[in-house]
Length: 208
Image 1 (cartoon, rainbow, N blue to C red):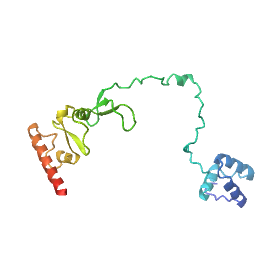
Image 2 (image 1 turned 180 degrees about the vertical axis):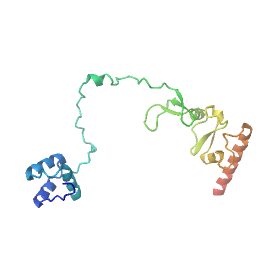
Image 3 (image 1 turned 135 degrees about the vertical axis):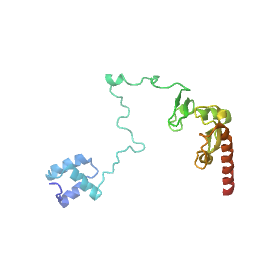
Image 4 (image 1 turned 90 degrees about the vertical axis):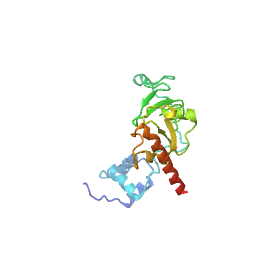
């Protein structure tokens, strides 16, 4: 009955503790057969072992150096699965060729380039086209800096349209303290940029 307290004899408890390292399902079956305890379910058995701290010592994970059980065995041939398996040298039909472009959710153009992906180690990756072209022309982007679009058009990837600025400068161009740089008239953009740089320089000087 649900909620009923189950009593165990000292002999039963001693047997369960002595066999705690066995597979629980197998140990439970042996316990029921030995003591005739059909009223003790596998769930009850597991709960008792957990309360007592009688763990099997197994984590379910492969330990370093442990050989897989199927080492050296070949996967049985199956005609249905063989039809969908990649063959050596096969290329997925959805793989995009080098230099393919796409527009990301943030509105920037992304391009497939022959650079190692730092997350997967793959020999190619997608990165912002404007940054790739800028770095080809100017070298690596300095640490702590970001590229700011000068004309407000994120799809204009001409390196001359992007300037490396300190990341701490970006909030001053976002419209938080003044008119937003991207939405400002073209003739006003240089003034906004110069003002933001001046205020940033003053703030950095005060910190020092």
